[in-house]
Image (cartoon, rainbow, N blue to C red):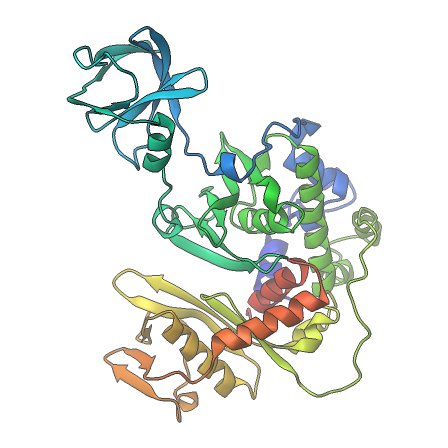
Length: 455
């Protein structure tokens, strides 16, 4: 069954030739490119940068950006003047080489320098960026023992939920740490909203952002080789498919190739290449060229179980869930693997409306279980569900019977827990991670669940 996504791609594929002759299609999706074409498309001209250019660790990734604005003097010290982020207040940091000598914040000068009580820093300094003069007002001087420590306390980063209010997905690292992928603003297709991954301490560990019209993806040293860069890349390009890379580092080109391979393997799993060959949209020769770029696939499968007994698992990240048979994990790239997916739901919220299920789908016979999971997910999120007209997928009333449901106007909610969703999610994570490395099967689980019930 071809999905709506495939139909959309196919509708866009009428146009100029891929190689100028053979194909009567226009490349709109990286899964239709050879590896060489994809690398040229994503990084025109093959530009490269040193691996040290963005070689960030946790400390540097969590250091707030201080914009250089000019130079001045503090007593006999020549200082560089850096502007504080607006999120912490109005002011400046005075640096002498790599040492913080003073901070000006909200009219107070913090320093350990003596003998300046009657000669405070103030007046104007030259802004080297635009050759203008900037006024600095100092109303009070406060002596501090360690200016750098004072600066560190001022620059304490805000909570992730405040700086990046939109939660996109929860992830589990290979070391068992729960991570959050958040956006600084509502994600809109092609707008390049910055994505940041936070660890359990609220530290930034990875990001994907728009840097002068190009994509910049970075992962802290401490969190590399855990599949995080690939997952961030997947989410970024899903929402910003036309963004290109400014240049590749060696790590960047590996992530890019992995992104292309995942897409090609996904097309294989969905059976789209075979379908398009049959329909004359692609040639076997071109598909062979695409597939020739795939590296040797790691053996991530186990022996196929002959048992027909259903061992159901529930994946949940707080905003979505998948109910599936564990046999999906045996070979998720198979064209038939979606038969082991039995239910999928995705919560959204709209100002003035509330929370609702944007998508809620299930196989025949799984309606009661999926509805119970959906209601529990909403309860765990602390929100009643909007079931009025105009928003959200239909929740079938017949499956609400027997559940402790309270109805207030056009919203419904559970009065008590009906499922220990947290325990089920933990069990699912342990099972999935025992079957494979971080990311690959999870990506396929989500993508296939999103596409299975599309009309």
